[in-house]
Picture 1 (cartoon, rainbow, N blue to C red):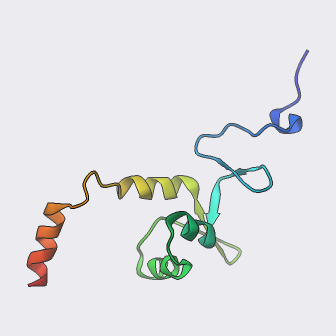
Picture 2 (picture 1 turned 120 degrees about the vertical axis):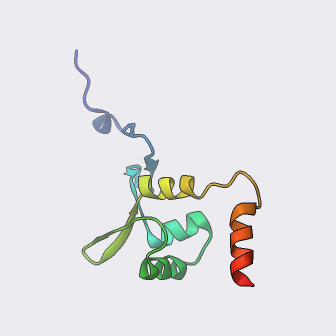
Length: 98
């Protein structure tokens, strides 16, 4: 006996990195407000970062900006620090500030 697809049984599809959204569907994209909430920053900061070419990659679809969850997680991993101070970076910045 075959079973109906998981979405017809009310189960969430198992996709790596997907988060359940408010409707129960897997959330694969975050809008600016959702990402700002995730990082506890202002949505305007994300706007500024896009303007100056900083921050994670984003898509602009029909005038809406969305961030793919995989790009957000990659950006987070690339900015992960093991220590509270990065002495090499601080040393380079410190000498440039003088």
